[in-house]
Length: 173
Ligand SMILES: [Zn+2]
Image (cartoon, rainbow, N blue to C red; front, side):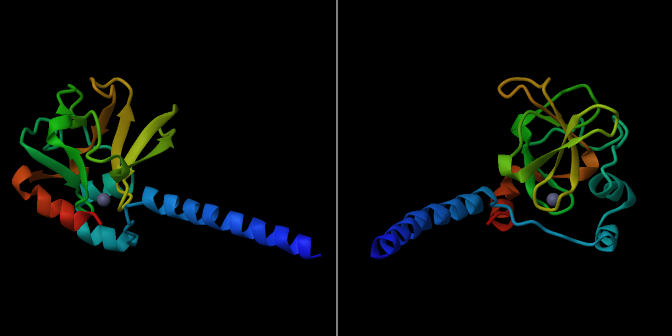
């Protein structure tokens, strides 16, 4: 009886640090605190085109947005919640008519999902904080990643590099 108790105590002690470690690991992987708003709140904050793309996963017409040919030194942020999403240093000319980047500003800022909207699987990308739809990512981008983040202009805002430090401090924990 005493032996069994000893074994149980040992198992309980052995399990304790392990489970704590798992919790800590989970927390460090989800650095972005999500924002949830109702459909009517988003409608009040976004114009029709922004709402259709960000909240309804629509796509703007190619060459119709204001950022596909935009050049500037800074960061492209989420139109819905201002989270930094792409650095201008990773923007490249794709010829598609949508702003294109070869990597996110920070991996945890951009979430991925699979969508079958046009009949075959594509990787949808969205803002990790507000869930706003951004566009898709494809495997035909340039080096060093070989990825092409094909993003709707209306999902983004541009912030000059000078204003970026304060933006990051206010936007991230
Ligand atoms: Zn967002």
